[in-house]
Length: 96
Image (tube, rainbow, N blue to C red; front, side, top):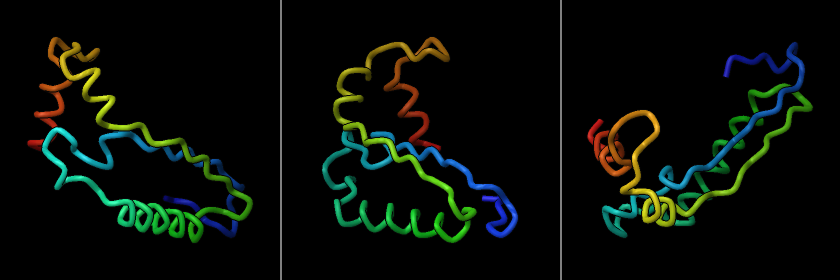
């Protein structure tokens, strides 16, 4: 974040959690983030933002979607950016 807390105006940060940022359900239970790890990581990020954002700034946190529901309902649908399924795209992204 390229902000100067002493000189910049307050900002509004949109912090959105997306289901597959937390676990990779289709690879098994062992790859899931524990609630303790999740809380520690989120609180660490919020603590960091508190040190770099100008005074008076706000953070809007959106709820977490259940990655299992997203994957189970969309895995075989065609992704809007190309002629392939979500499952194919996510398999490719996992290889990166």
